[in-house]
Length: 410
Image (cartoon, rainbow, N blue to C red; front, side, top):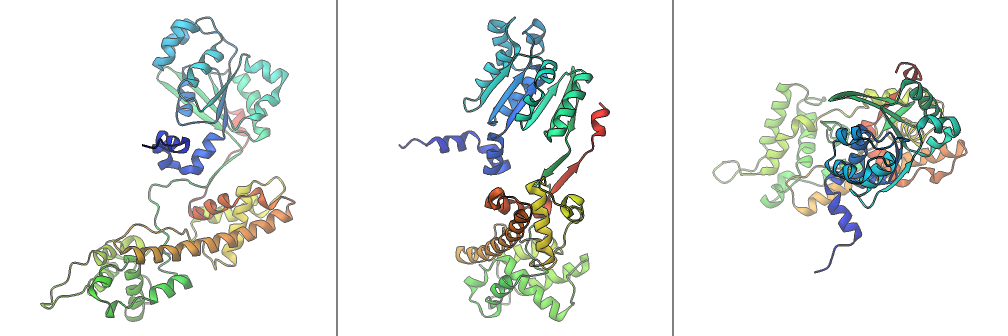
């Protein structure tokens, strides 16, 4: 039996988290370098939960020696055992680093046996090499100095302090942008209220009234809803079914389309039942969310500079797309849910959405390239993968902004 390669073993090890945040999320994690100040119980617990899923590298900054208090406070059993046997009176940063590395051989660990106060005095730029700095149990005076350094370098600082079983966390950062915000209830982007030309053409290829039973019962429910929505517009109303009464009437219209046998009894067509079931969620209006409108109107979008991040350049490109090719709509997401249909019909419908999504992403990319050129940046500074991901999740972009008052309010 062939043994799985390194990539296969990696997928097996990280299967659960790959399902949560995908390959690109794992790559972001594996490219990150995190600094934790003080290998306290809180600090080592944070690092444990970064090392196990495969953080790229970490550095522990701690000038203290391991004491009996550390052995009693550290919550990780492996660390507790090793501290007792080998670590007492040794460097706390080195001991914690070595023990944490045992949890995942793919992770690179480093340590600096020096206090953060000395580093801030002698080499404050030391902290600029990290993607994130986590400070645990630091005095206020040190926190204020560290926060000022990281704020000016736009590096996130996570402040943690614990008191037994209670504690708090504070984030010090100028802004935090999220492309994949993972909302609890994310609706499908089907565009049934505003079908794009390729979708309209595809739906028109189906003639439900003259199909044989097999084809009729294997037509995707999206096509069924689209067909009967056209009928609704022609016979009932020019508006989408909005309230309960109208949606029930629309469901009944679909139900009447189920084939009947020679006795007049409706056939068992699961795809039509699936269409009826999805009416409530499929007939949402295609609108730009208020949060995205706020991004479009923010100065960071309207007044791009050479220092603007790729996120804001893409937001501006997205705004340009909406005003032009999108005709008031965001890019098509390009995904459809699983449904009852034969493989050929499902794949054809899936490709209609995918190709439209590619076309929209290319249009956004064209706007982004022009913006990058005007800012004196290289076109390749925004990758095709980043562009595709941004367009796919354009509906749920998230942005948090803070000001430097947070530094003064510890």
